Length: 325
Ligand code: TXA
Ligand code: MG
Image (cartoon, rainbow, N blue to C red; front, side):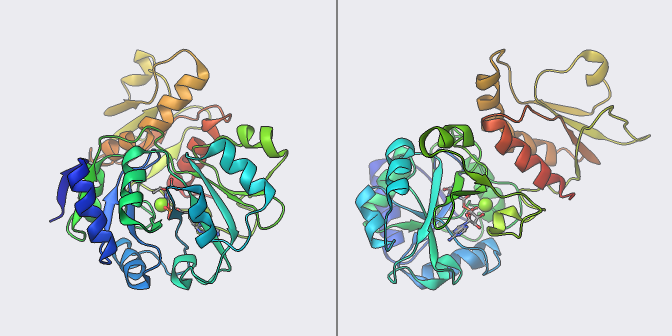
């Protein structure tokens, strides 16, 4: 079973040593927990794929602690990348650029591009710094399943497969980074913790890849981020089947007459301010889904949230959890 370690300096140095020796460490970022290995060690990266049961065609994000590290990973860092990095790094934005030869093919699934992100979580930054190497890290969950926002979530899914989990409490943002491809017309490959509206303020209009487009990022697979319990997004009136044990993922606290139809309810937000409510909802989303998934329900009904700011990423995750085209 994995050792769950507090994020003390001493433990981070131990974890960094594990990374340097080609081992894997699960660690917190501001978005979700990551499963990290030395990005320049193909064997370590191969183990990440194995542990996650991740298909080899799905490339992995490389995490850096200093902007200068990007030069070890990318051929050319153009002006737009610099502008985005300046504005959003460290933080929940991943930038896809042409890769340099140094980056092992296994990291990028054979693509000639690499996804780079500088996380803002101090524990992630320290771990990368002490490891003295960029860290390749997907979310620390089994492929296709719910992402982990606590060390406990990581332990449940991967505890018997990895050595160390660094525990620094729950993740602040709660949904994964926004992934933007700058190798052509700027295109959002995955909606996430940095709202598209904010990105457009600095580089102008960007394209958002939709599901009718050919997948360019496996994060776009239609079934992903899924609980084991079937999830249905509420469209119109909720009609709950006879004898069905149903859970509700509510954006705001529901009225009593709605609430009484459900066996278990998770409320994502309490604020009256919409932006704050969406921030709360993103932060609570995966934890709430993990709890509903463990409640032995027949079905989870999910309320829609307004599709602005972080609401876009939340609805993206709910649609993928539902897995219906
Ligand atoms: O917030 C996050 O991004 C978290 C934390 C740990 O940093 N990581 C994360 O990794 O969500 P993962 O592997 O679960 O998702 C990475 C996404 C996938 O959709 C993958 O297809 C895409 O990024 N991706 C990675 N490299 C790519 C590349 N070179 N081109 C296009 N998409 C890429
Ligand atoms: Mg993931």
